[in-house]
Length: 215
Image 1 (cartoon, rainbow, N blue to C red):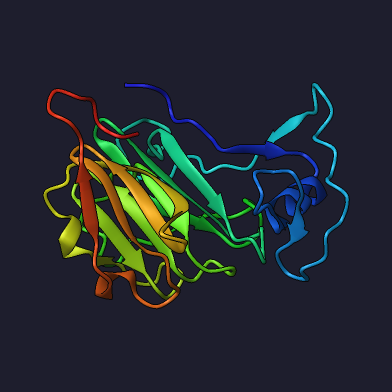
Image 2 (cartoon, rainbow, N blue to C red):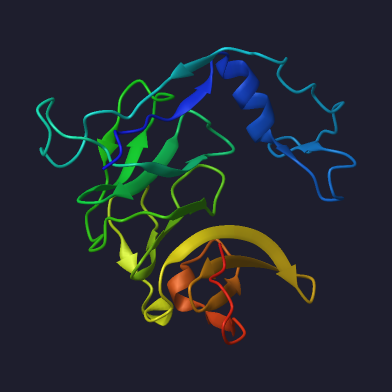
């Protein structure tokens, strides 16, 4: 298999904080601060060749290698808008799949948060709230949801049978906020609310016959 991959982020934590705190509602023509509502000037992107630093995770997971295990191939990485020190990641690589990994100190330390997560092959993650307490995870078994910062996970039964839940995006249907999930079976969607999504009606827009899975 592939060697374990680490998540890398800009050396300047301040840069990440600025980028994760801004929200655009008009196709990136303007931005506002998600915490204060203010509309500052759009920040400049990091300069070319800005150095990156490794923040992990590494050697977390199944003890299948001489160095004590591997985290698998990291795929999704998400940080809480109101507190970018809170980071979730996950992935899978052949037999190594550590499930959801969480840091509360900008990657200096990581822990596994998998209670109730029966499928630890993570393909997608999305933070619903501002603080990183309400999170959904995409797996080959469908979507899982936590309401307590990863303390426990619940399988959303309506997504069973959709195949791999690959990625999440927010959008709208008829003007109402929705969360979209790309799956092998098609494009799933659910009203985007901060109350349990497992209680909402999940719907699937099926892919045309012979088409590829939504990514």
